[in-house]
Image 1 (tube, rainbow, N blue to C red):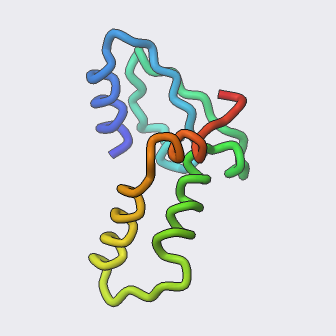
Image 2: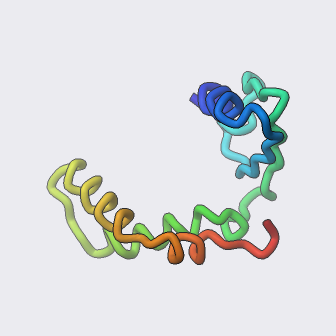
Length: 102
């Protein structure tokens, strides 16, 4: 799946050189990963979720959508997450994911 993502990203932004910052998940570092020529990958240091901007988004979603709630079905859980995500303004999203080092 990571190869498909990289291929589609490369095609969608073929006129750009892309710097992709990733954590060190196994699928991000697979020896079978095919990195297109217009994508450069830099890895965050291991065990450093505080440096990964999306971690703050996940923390917010967990707090707003699922904290202290029990869902009878996976669909109900997904609906709760989607509803909270859709309430998220662009400004709030930018604040959650802002990093001074990027």
